[in-house]
Amino acid sequence: MSRRGKFITFEGLDGTGKSTQIRKLAGALRSAGHEVIETREPGGTEAGEKIRRLLLDSATEGLSSLAEMALMFAARAQHIAEVIEPALAIGQIVLCDRFTDSTEAYQGNGRRLGSDVVLKLHRLLCGDIQPDLTILLDSEPGLSLGRARARNRRTSNASQSSNRFAGGHRGDENRFEQETRVFFNRVRQGYRAIAAREPERVAVVDATGTPGQTHRQIMEIVERRLKLGPRAA
Ligand code: TYD
Image (cartoon, rainbow, N blue to C red; front, side, top):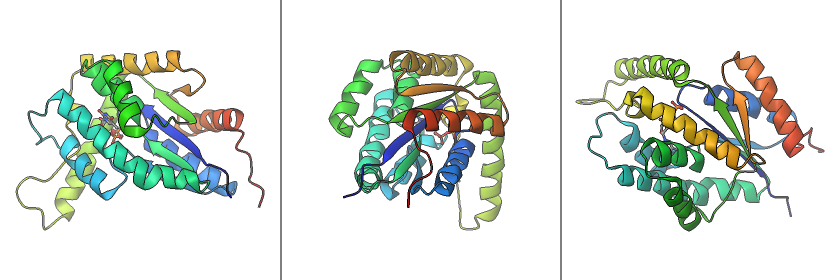
């Protein structure tokens, strides 16, 4: 029977470079002989990607904070059942862009629903599954949001020009990026509180360096904490 795999999550404000770092870490781990899957939340499954479109589209108006949190967990429960648990069960390494810490930081702190309800729902709906390691890419909201907004402008322009079937409103992923600086400061404080509460799981990485510098820091943490060296054939 194969050993259970490792579950590594990436967290941080929008635009901190999570997806670039996931790609780089996945490449390095594959070169060392590991089987790796890259996935994201909200999303990662067919149903989850539909929920993602609803949650992130700036045309979605009037969603209550509780409904928003419930949808995040609905997507997550499906993602765990369909993707994360089966991959871990056959010994793969799962790299996931956001997980329950995002709900605690954004809905718990940003929307002020509190941590307790998020952690309770996690126990009820997610079987309390915990990442083996969480990389928190930390940077000031001013810096990361500028990057996230520029990227979303580029991708929504590209999808509008390439999608000749799209009539009426074309979906974007801007709903959260329209939040205020005050909201994102609360999200960042939420993340820092999680890292202070669970230092053995969460490693805080400065996200203001170059992608190469950040990658080297992440490699060092992964090797030290999870002892993921080259895999014996
Ligand atoms: P993502 O695509 O990772 O954004 P980015 O690449 O810009 O970092 O995540 C989409 C948005 O969803 C992001 O603004 C954070 C938000 N979110 C929550 O508010 N709660 C959650 O539980 C999750 C998973 C994401």
